[in-house]
Image: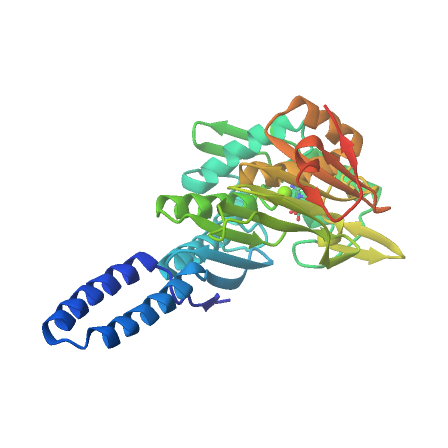
Amino acid sequence: MRPVYSNTHLSNCQILFDSFFRFCYTFFKISFEFGDLMKKLMICIVLIALLLTGCSVSEPEEADLYAMDTLMKIKIWGEHEDLVLVTDEIHRLDLLLSAADSGSLLSQINLSGSAELSGDILTLTQDALSLSEKTGGAFDPTVYPLVRLWGFPDDAYHVPTQEELDETLPLVGTEHIHMDGSSITLDKGTMLDFGAIAKGYAAQQCVNLLEENGVEAALLSLGGNVQTLGTKPDGTAWNIGIADPDNPSQAIAQLSFFGSKALVTSGGYQRFFEFNGVSYHHILDPKTGMPADQTLASVTILCDNGEVADAYSTALFVMGLEEATEFWKTQNDFDAVFIMKDRTIYATEGCAELLSGCEFTVIKR
Ligand code: AMP
Ligand code: MG
């Protein structure tokens, strides 16, 4: 789907002011030479007032697009080309990383079982291996055979029998990935799935590109992945809502902060199906093959890096509140908000001071 763009009217005030002062200089010169100064001075003052009003609030460039199986919204306080750069980058990564799309590079690797990796896929594989190790296997990039067994890639939902799970579980685990430099070999039947980090990686890549291009402020919302760049031009904090798991179009709480951050939510409500009155969601426990912890409704991670935030949101959802709390205590690169199925909310210290709009319990170190 092509992105829907909307335009900025005054994206570069400096150029406008330069031209304006050049205009005024010439105007005054002519006025002094030909008289009628007061009348022309009045016109100048009105023009200055109009320009200042126009420049005080610059409008962002905006686009809505559908990619990576989700609706995305991009806002950039920059040039139109920056917006095109970001949407192109998202589509490029989408084509590369979708395990469900038989034409993607990732699918080809899964199909052939071995490949020489480079670029984004090499980086993602290396990052995924280290994030999996860090989270004790709660985040597992080899979960795809299970995801397929449950029918999530093509909406052909199926509740597996224990026998089917027992047949599939031996294909899952990072020990089935063999790296030799940049060459990868997968054990027979093992398949990679970057679904839990692809959006976070894409958001981080986009923000890096924008920074390289000198863009000072942007807000990227890629489904449950929000990424901010810099400070909003009006100087106010970024206010990002956390979706209400029972009514995802509404916010249950909001986090307010300044600067560049990633805010990523994983929740069972984001993708699920019901069978015989039981709900089954898409975040799987690699140890059992079943949908993870059914007492958590969502986990939101606040972190400096989008890819790490994305891996952690999935991993901490799999861990459940207690294990996730212990994990947080051992790390110092993120904070989290946990929303339970019964709607009680827990926030780690760093998030607690930024959270509003709800009652919550603070988790301390
Ligand atoms: P997220 O929405 O970021 O939590 O990612 C969920 C997606 O990641 C699912 O749709 C699966 O494709 C994949 N996935 C499910 N469970 C896991 C897991 N334990 N580790 C890694 N990826 C997973
Ligand atoms: Mg994730």
